[in-house]
Length: 296
Image (tube, rainbow, N blue to C red; front, side, top):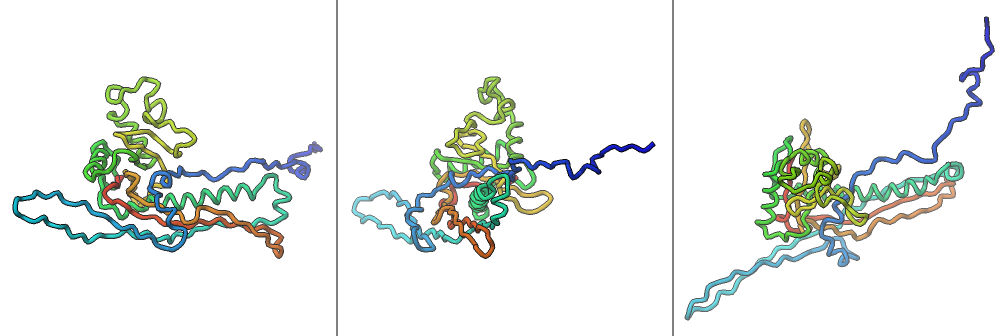
């Protein structure tokens, strides 16, 4: 017997589809490096394309013998050259009809994303400085170890690196490795109370970060603040090589000649608004022996 049911097919024209006023934003990585490196020369680079930083050597203490003249030292000093050669931009064009009819402020959403995109590029360029380092511990495809971490710290100590402002930037995978190393998490080793245990909190002592802290702070190990980032640089395949870093602030330089700026222009021929964000900066090693790659 035939029925006269109205189905979802026959009634499709009357069934409303709802678009949420909240959008699913692209996941953002922790950006850490810009706040951890030396930026002292930025004020000197209001113009020009290269900064030259002359180096000054230490002198030698010599024993003075009676009746002999002193020996005067001769210096042939080097120079660190920082090229301001990284000019990146992000851009989009949004038509009027979209701005009028959209259920959310798309221009603001994408403008915020442009700032993140450019900051991520700066973060990656700083982390890529691992390639010029002379000091390295660890082996490709293996996990971080207590011995390797300590050896990296020793490299900095051997170089008379200041004990303050020391940082490590590691992958999430290596963070979880550390959470399985008894030397870092046992109460008998670290003095944690039960509520402070890293297996409860997900971070080491000192890992709670305030709004003014850099996102991604995992905790402190041997006086080194450890940050977790998916921007740690990789090379190769099967297995990938992960180039984690342990360094003191003066190991690297960042010079932002132009911080991220956003410019907009109306295109009457397109009935649309063009939005462009750009930034201009340079990065460089500053003190090579103040940094060590931790290869995993």
